[in-house]
Image (cartoon, rainbow, N blue to C red; front, side, top):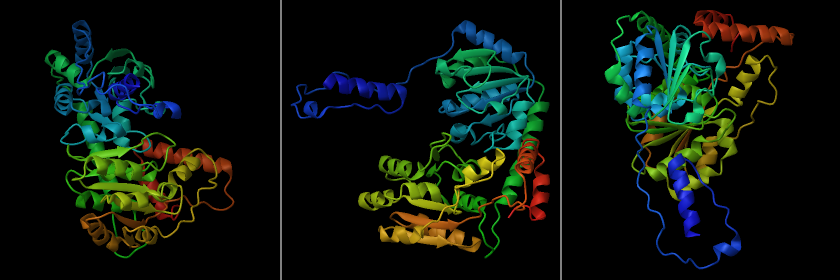
Length: 438
């Protein structure tokens, strides 16, 4: 049994994941024979990079390209300095995947945001307008957001990831930090910065548009969820650990939480999963008892795991829960509309989450208007125990005439998607002003 335990611990450490032992009851009741573990484990820091010949070939490819865009993911953790130095040599804008946000976004003059439906039009354009896409440590899954005509180079520690999401012209197996350290001396300075300048300018315009949406107007209802995330970003600790539920809380975390090299952003980030934020917050708080931990929970996600409110009280964990209450499975609703389907079964009949938190022994607060958001968030974050603040946010649903046909819905959904991807956000704002959105 000792050997089996050692093997499953080794598998968990080497794969950076979870291992499970199925232990029969009769075995569990037997006396342990071994008193010492058969294997001893140290922190694993393998130095894996392409061969010298591969590094030379990679450098040649990059030196010959003038319009390079970098797409980085969580595999860039620990290699921030090398990534920024390389982007400077290549004059390459950096697009980050959601998992890469906390490792790439901060202190980065080459940052142009995310791509995909959660991201920025600037990230999409930076990838679509390059002649070479350099993917580093990412498994970004959405094929429709990859360029069709550009050459693609991929660097990843896991060889099985190469070419998994899009066609790859050149694939290299290696750790980001070790690979870039070997590569940097061989890179030449790209003198053409037109692609970088255009991408950064596009990002600044897109960022301005998002910031304008994060406005709170006195006692006007409902509250913009963007405003809640922006205020939380301002008030949270510099080394706060954020967790976010799958769905719209992930959107607001992606667009409005600022990473600085100390903060962490945890989530499932797997399509179709739910209710992860509070369990992850509990794990983070137990692991880092001295740090501020904030869960950005959807009302649907929290309702699925409400028993964990009792866990917070039982374990006396000072986790702060922000509940984005819009009485719907909002992201599912958006996906259905974007696919041309009439939404069905997405309404939620929610309880009073603040009162339920109080009944469980937590501090329960409610914000119904924008002017209540800042004082309530401040009170919750400063509370020395677990706290929940329920915020009534806009559902942001698309309101259509009752006689609309499915074909009309499909056409309008395609128009919206194309407008966003082509940077024509002003057209959507104009529609909002004509009460097409509520």
